[in-house]
Image 1 (cartoon, helix red, strand yellow):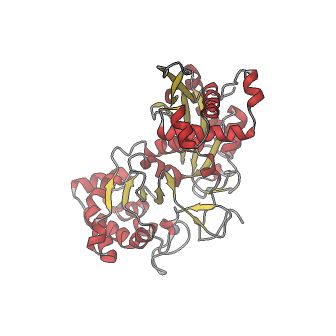
Image 2: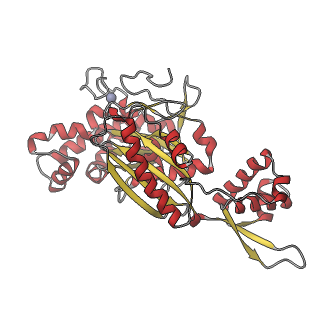
Length: 419
Ligand SMILES: [Zn+2]
C-alpha cells in the first residue's frame, strides 16, 4: 500500500512547461510560503525575484501537489484574479519514529503540528532486525491507515535511532545496547513498504527539534537531554549545528557527553574513562542511590522531591560539574539558551542554580547570567514531537539533511562508522 497518494496525470499545459529547473524553483516557492505565508504571487515574485507569471505557475503546480491552496482576492481593477497562497497545513503530515530500546514509538502530526496518531510497541524478544522491521511496519501501517482515513498526504518520515549508523544509508551498523537493531535500514524499509521517503539519524536531531519550536530562531541553543545517558546537541535557526571535520559531511555536535574530563575518572559505558556522562548520566545516579532502593529514574525523582537521602546534594554536585565542564563549549558556540529536557529534566530544576554557579566559576557571573537556562515543560513526548518536526523540516529543506552526517565518534572515541 502506498502512503503517498498516486497523483492523476498532469494537465497537458503543465507537462509542456515543466522541467527540472522549474521543479527546483517550485521548492523555493514552497519554502517561502512555509516561512512567510500566506502571501500573494506578487509578494512571492518580489521576494524571489521572479516574474509573477513564473510564480503563478509554481503555485499552481504546488496546489496540484496538494501542498498549498489559494484564497481568491478581489481583483484590482480589471486585472486577472488574485490569490493569497498558503501552506495546506492540515492536509499534509509527517511521521516521527523514535527507537528507545526496547520501546519503539511512532507519531504522526500534520504540518500545523497537530498530533493525529501516537502509538508504541515493545521490541523485547526481537532477535534480529527483520523482527524489529516487522513490528515497525505494523505500527507505521496503522499510522498510514489513519492518514488515509483523514485524506492526509504523508510526506516524509524521520527515524531517530540509537547506535552507530551507516553514514550513507542511515542503517544501524552497531547498537551496543540493543543488538537486534543491527542491520535495520529504516529508510529502505519505509520506501519499499510504504513508498514513503525517510531519513534516519541519531537521537540528537530529535532532542533538538523537540525543543526548537520554543526557542527563538536567532538564539544559539544547547539542548541537554537528561536520561540514563547524557545527550547534548547544539542548534540555531532550526538547524542542528555541525562541525566539518575530516568527514565529507557536517557532523552533528552531539558527542560532548563522551568527552573525557578526567583521564583516571570512572569507567563509562563507552569504554573510556572520565566521560562527562560517567559523572552525570542518569545511570550513574541510579547506581549511586541503589542502596536507597532507587531502581528507576522515577524513583530518583521522587526521592529528590521528598528531599531525602542526600539526593539533592548529589544533584547539585552533578549539575555544578556539568556547568563547569560545558562552559567552554557554550562560550565557543555563543550559546545564549540552555534547555534541559528528558526524563530527568524535572529534577534538574533542583540543581539549576548550581549549574549556573558552575558556569560562573569558568566564565564569570556576569556572562553566566546572560545565558537563559530553563527546564522544558511537559517533557513526555518531546522526542517524538522532535522526530515528527525533523521529518517536516527534512521535507521542506532536504539539502540540510543531505549534508547531515551520521558519523559517530563515540564508543572508545573511534570512528566506527564511515571508515
Ligand atoms: Zn563515554
